Length: 228
Image (cartoon, rainbow, N blue to C red; front, side, top):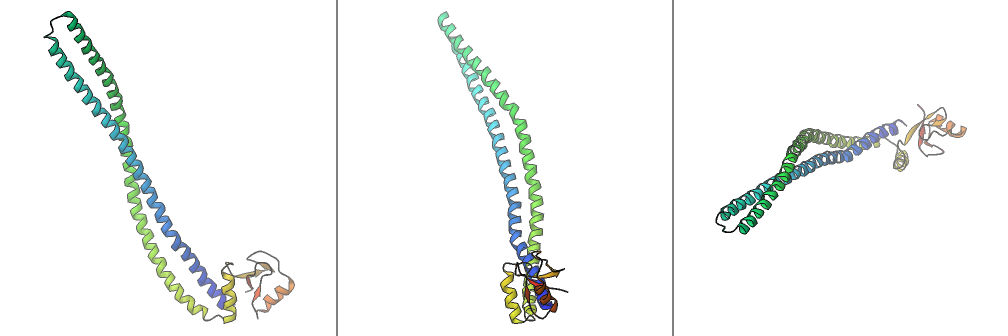
């Protein structure tokens, strides 16, 4: 039984490292996903800030254009000959001035929104910087661990060949069939109980295990039983 236990120990290490080998790329993907999320939030905050700044600039252009029109109207007003024409022009000027008041109010609202939007951009940028810094270090650690895992796996695969050669062929075939679905495959019979499935074994099974001259399967899960 000792050769099988030695083989199982190697297989357990291989199994754990293979799981880690599959897990490392997923962990890297999770890390990059966090950075991508932070970058998307930064882009959204920047777009929001730009929208407010564009609105402020648009209002400035509109107000400027209307003020220029008012100045032009006042210039024209000086050349009018009748009171009726003068009052009509004055009404148009007042309408323009009222429109300026409305636009300036909207401009102030847009300007008030700029500082909070700028703060959101700065906060989002800080998060991107933090994620980037942390990610680079973490990914480097994962890449280093990945290299270690691959190297250790290659070493264990070679070691497994050597250890498996020490197991009797018939025993090895039974072990290989079982280990696909049963991990661990070789388990301790503890006080007559299979430590794999925790089922109490019959007296006959316990007796065969204690004799240590043949491989004995658990009556329930099929694992190979042994005693020290």
